[in-house]
Length: 104
Image 1 (cartoon, rainbow, N blue to C red):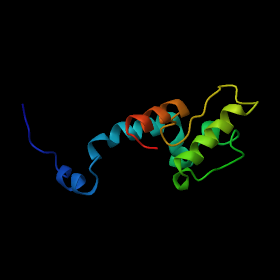
Image 2: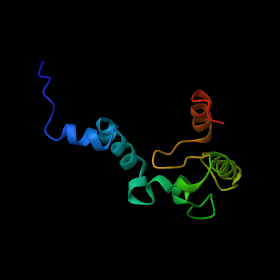
Image 3: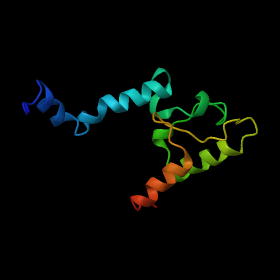
Image 4: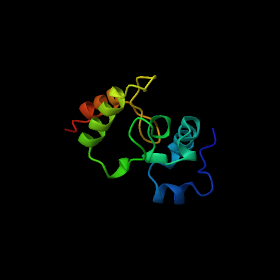
């Protein structure tokens, strides 16, 4: 088995400790459709259940939770979804991640 480091890998690793995961993360962003719009600030269906664009990256987790609750309560949300962010994480998953990582 060849264990040589690909050209540029050491440089990439020095600047981004998650560089090895970037291809999968980029595929997720592409497949979710968030890379064509607001990326990390994108919400389900490009914003109609949040009253327009939101700045997720500047929000607290409590504010994101409240926003996701608002999305779920929206009468036109036919998907009953609270997907937000580049990877379209729903409220239940985000809450489970917070709990697993002991984030209040």
